[in-house]
Length: 128
Image 1 (cartoon, one colour):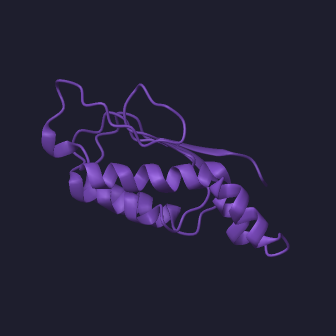
Image 2: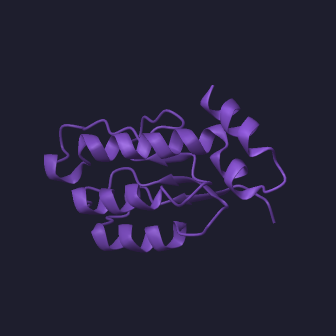
């Protein structure tokens, strides 16, 4: 089955242990394209780092929603007034998430998984 899969965990009171479980699901999963983890105030910088680290190995995730107002291919974190500073990822973590999500949106998975493609031309097109 090649259908797009969504994991909607909006306002589920997630914490860092849930981020570890989500990272395990994403490790090797090539069908989940969108995860909504918006409004989970108990996720600390450690949990966000766990999610950012797994994005290096996951090629299918294109959208990571962490707030209600998201743009595609970004891990945007608009901090509402009621969210504590400790429950949002650091700037380097945000940058890392954005980097891998943008690569995935540009087709990184196809270049790394499809051995029949001309990888040099594919990577040149990805970079351009």
